[in-house]
Length: 492
Image (cartoon, rainbow, N blue to C red; front, top):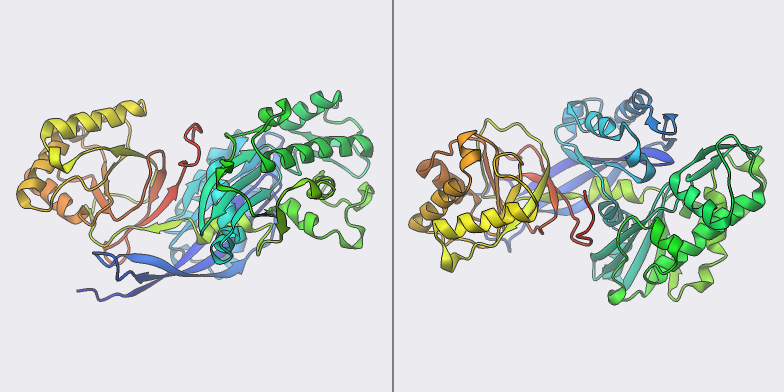
């Protein structure tokens, strides 16, 4: 029955950050899982095949990304990696991170980089908790937590944010993010300020400082600012935020420290200086600061406070490239092998919120299914027929034609506006019943197209997903899951 046992995919990870932008290409090896009822594919191997150049993220001004320059850079990188033919790129993710995600044209860069010029399926993703998860995976902290049987806290310190996570037994169990980064204050060799981001204005206010863009700042005051940032970072990776400044800088809620912390590792651009202070790199001589920001000084201030941490500090496998490795090599999930879709659907489908529908198979009826779907829409303040969502079911129906027909008619009855206006209907199941449900819906209801049924996906309510072009003649689908399960209060 199964002719294909292994799939090789080329995946790209693109990171547009507050300080730097870069990409990687990975080769993903997918193999069938003999423990799965449908022998679904799982990612068995990951190999980085190209690490690109790292450039300063080009800006027109403090509020605007230089999109033409950025697109030109990535096109050159595709060519250098041997992917000038973008059809050779099968999957991937674009991550716009930190302060860059707040720029006024950030959405435009996401659309351009995730469009047809970038390959068959490049997922546009963002969000502080998701970035924290990717950084933990890409740095190697999560894998190390499994090998070493430890609970490892990873802090990825970039240009605008520090993305924090705790990994335990090979899984990321809690995430958080705070506005602390090396490019939140930037200046030239003479100390003339050319960039002050909002978090630094808060820090300066706390310190009684008042600088504006164009002012000359002393090295003493740069260190005061970096020092308060360092104090605050140590505070939030040691326990919940307590000081007013820490609470103001937090982008998410605190980490769940009930998992414990046995070891701490740092990644991100700032960590490159934190682990390597050889040759006097971290000096107060601004002439030697080629990055024109406080990243080196922030690293120095953090290093002075390392002994305040209660856990051992280790160096991760990957530092500055952690997030982009996570995006390119770890963000992909694969659906089961018993899915259903119609040929009229144009992929990828992007940014679909996942809503759990609590249908009990023992109570299966049109009224029960309709009531639970209505509750699902209401929880997210969404309107049926207007907002595309993925309805996620946990074992809702027995696999008999009679029960499947009842379930199919229940879906039709619960989604009258979607059916009437031929809107996209996305149904996802944890069990391998997607193909059966889809075929019965098409056969027994008015829903004939704009229907996709995926199965064997482990999702949570508040996840968002992107669904890529089907593989192996429509047998399986690449799905990027952008999990917010670690922090339900964050808006994606």
